Amino acid sequence: MNRNTLRIALPIISVTLFLVAWSLYVRTAQVSAFVLPPPEAIVVALSAMLFDPDLWAHTLVTVTEALSGFGIAVALGLTLGFVMARVPPVEWALKPFVVLLQLIPKIALAPLFILWFGFGLESKIVIAAALAFFPIFSNALQAFKSVDPGDRDVFVMLQANPFQRFVLLDFPNALPVILTGAEVAVVLSMIGAIVGEFIGGNKGLGYLAVAHLQNLAVAELFGVIVVLTLVGLVFYTIIGRLRALLTPWHVSSDRNRQA
Image (cartoon, rainbow, N blue to C red; front, side, top):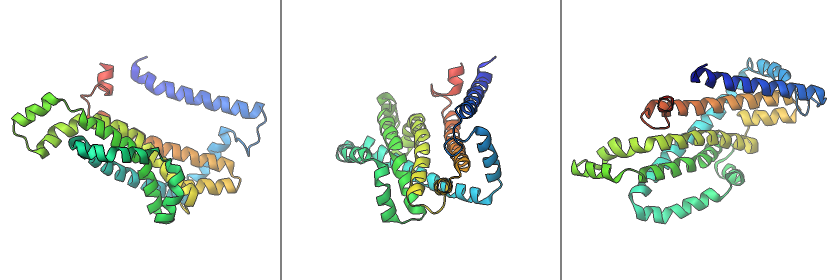
């Protein structure tokens, strides 16, 4: 069995064993379906939900919030990381402030964001961006500061202007590390959107989960969790594929690990 087959087979086997163990535990321990429904009940509930247009409408709202917040985090994180890497006084002045802001639990600030930005999409986007910002910023800062001095000297000798140096040297060198941070940030943006919907949402998958919980529809609640997991997995996989596609030369690339 080759490496690629194992990479596909092992996750399927582990998930199947987990579901079998879950089902056996629920049945042998006689756990109430209001506490922990068996996987079969969740599959039935999810199958019915997939034909409900409301599920897709709520999913679109959550995806919009998460991706918008992620996009804002990427723009701000890359810009601030590059400026601070290239202008040390800016780093000295702003980095302590950024780190202190990161130490504040964003979940605790979520009610304030809803108070400031309202109950619409804007507050959820801000929460998603706040959670996703730091992995992008910290990775970008370190990546832009880690450009090889010898390569930089070569570009100076060639009289490259700042734009050429950024496009041909700084950004390609930093891209693998930035995309690694993006893999974490895109998941955090989903968490931020859901937290915002939990606290003050009237639409979205987080709101739908709370609605099912209030109705004691536990199987449907698990169905929403499955949808959230799949959406987050799709986002994470897309970033991972982009990293493999855009940086095939990097040591973290699948091609290099298989070589």
